[in-house]
Length: 367
Image (tube, rainbow, N blue to C red; front, top):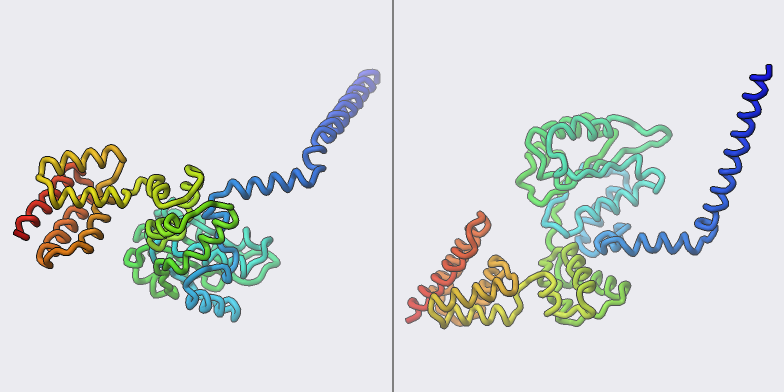
């Protein structure tokens, strides 16, 4: 009996000690959450730390800046509840992923989003296992108390193997009533015809400067940046219709320099400056082989320039030169060969020698 009483007394002491600890912990924790302004500050800081690509990603279809025909067509699909399987293709940074995520946010409430939308990057796991596993499991199950279809977004679907794409074809056929698929890719030719025929295809072309300009201006205003006109033009020239690339360059340049101008943009991304290209072309046209090689190689190494970037700018420069057509055609043909060899991973020094040789021969053709 005495043993039972002592056990009960010990248990009572443990309970009392535990409750006191909880009270102390709650008292210590209260200041962190009682101040709503500090909580809002933490949430604001989390938003501020986001990359601008995510921070300014469109949340609604109306926020998208281009491809009006595509957006209006998809908006009609959603309004009439007739959304088919979709296939978005085109170069990167043109709004493919943003469009389908904006669609998903328009179709589903915030509470439904996590249970009814599956977003996968197919390049992470390209094999048949991802189709038979996560995709099949998600597509085959229905959510309780929720009607309507699920949405499965497969980004970079062109990285999937042919076996995985064939397995996906069967899943799409079998679970169309329960799920809709959106395949996103850069190269349509890498998607098997059987998948293409089961989807409504939309091509997202590169954005024009006129389409990119308002969104860049919006980011500049929101972030209170100092951007010159030539800096903004340099951003859009380097982006080549890729909005993601433009925002990334803008963010990195604004963090590295107080002012976003043309020179600072080029320095930030390691792109050759206009005066560097003028110097290189002048050397190629007027100097002998040995001097040209040493001078251009020294400039390239000193400023950390990639021969691919130099070649691209020299090509544009050649188009503006007043040269006979046969000389221009010869130079462009040779530069195309050099670009191909660079893409294959050959030595930059050898290809620089080849570029200088092409200009040496071109000079002889003009005499």
